[in-house]
Image (cartoon, rainbow, N blue to C red; front, side, top):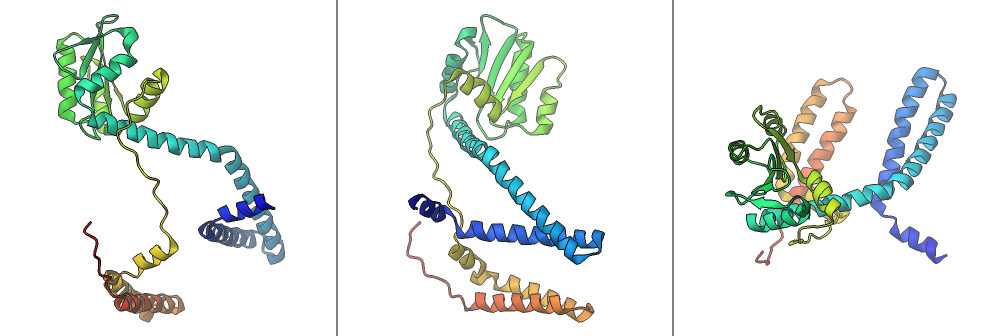
Length: 275
C-alpha cells in the first residue's frame, strides 16, 4: 500500500496533462484517417482505439528498455561539459601535464609551444590542444598545423571543445599533413574514460528545475506582453472580417484581447533584491 502511494506521489500533474494531450491528439489523427479510408465511423473508432492502445504499450516497453540508458547519457553529457569547463579554465601547462599522464606510454616531449606535444616513440605524430574558447579559432589551429609541418610531423591530432564543421573539413583536408580534430565527446571517451584519468571538476551545476504552472502564468501575463497580445488579436479580428467561416477567428481574437486586458491589469512588482 505504501509503495503504491509513493508511486502516485511521483506522478506530476504536468505529466498527466502531457499524456492526455498526446492521446487525444493522436486519437484524432488516427480517427480522421481511419474514417477517411474505411468510410464507416464505428469501424474507424474501433481501429483508432486499437492502434492507440498498441502505440501506448509500445511507448511503455520502449521507455522501460531505453529510459534508463537515456538518463545515464544525460548525466554523462553533463560531466563532459564540466570537464570541458575545467580544460578551458586550466593553464596550458596544467593541460599539458594532464595529457602527459594520460599518454605516458608514448613518453611525451615538450616543445617550444606549450600546447604542442611530440613523442619519443613516434616523432612523426603529435598532439596539440586549444581550449581557449568553446569553438576552435581558425588562426590558432593554423598556427599549430604550420608548426607541425615545420617540425616534419606527418600526423597531427588537435584537441578542442568544439570546431565548426566547415573549419574541421578544411583542416582535415590539408595536403601537407594528416590532421584529425577531436572534440568534446571524443576527448572524454577516448582519452579520459579509456585511461580513467579525468580533469578535476572546478565547477558544479545545480539541476535546473522545470518551470512551474504558477510561474508560467506569471510569465504569460507579464505587463510588457499586453501590446503583443493586442496586435495579434487585432490581426486575427481583421481576418475574421474577410474569411467566410470566421468563428475560429472570433474566438482567437477574443482570447488575445482578453489576455491583453489581463496583462494591463497586472501591476509591476516592486523588487528589493540587490541582485
